[in-house]
Length: 356
Image (cartoon, rainbow, N blue to C red):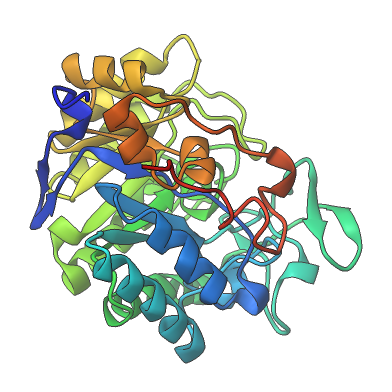
């Protein structure tokens, strides 16, 4: 048994005692029919409760933020009740779970939104690419409406309400999704934020909405219950490279010192190691890294003090007992990409654990 692995050692994250440093990364799985967490999802998360920390799939604090087919929300009584069943199941098995609050912004299609919802973004800049809709298959991404002052106030309030609802649903904390080209990163990035008001232009203005949301979430939950995810040099969802990456994340991380953690997605860009180091130093607190890590790479990242915790995505899809497999250095089951985003249990809750 590999009991000497740093990855398997305990870690104190704020007020949480984690039994290991293995984090289940947030992953869109598209099983929330009607946007409501269900029994299938309850079983899926409960199966993976041995992780040091589970971070849920992206969960919208607003009807406007759903965007994709079959992703969950956290703004209605039914959704709060559905998530409460999930958190109860995880806690019963001794686990800890944060919900990732994700508003997709411009990465949305009307077919995937409830009636009366709107596609909003910092600026009216459409993203290249298509989005799956259950009604009409792949459809081009439309041009969003630029958020006006009322939209900003309403969306800010939805994030605050999401933090309150997370508490009522029994989550141990929240992660703000400011990565992968969704709404919060759309404010950070000069390509998607072309505003000329207090929320656009300079770096200090582009980071303001994210900071406001984070600080208000802290007021609800406490700083040790709020984390944030970032992706320096990420180009996912049509975000081109720009010259202010390191400076943007240095300023953001400095303003967010004291949060529970900074979750950094690893990219292969030549400047990523430098930018990530700058962000880590500016933040000065617990770091989660994510992006193609295996057991050996995770141990190296921990040994090199690049992280305190390591998040795993795809390995957790097909290995609900990933912690045990790492402990035994057992082979991992490969996932089936064809079932990543389908609606049923196949490729979701039907992967089995090791036999004794």
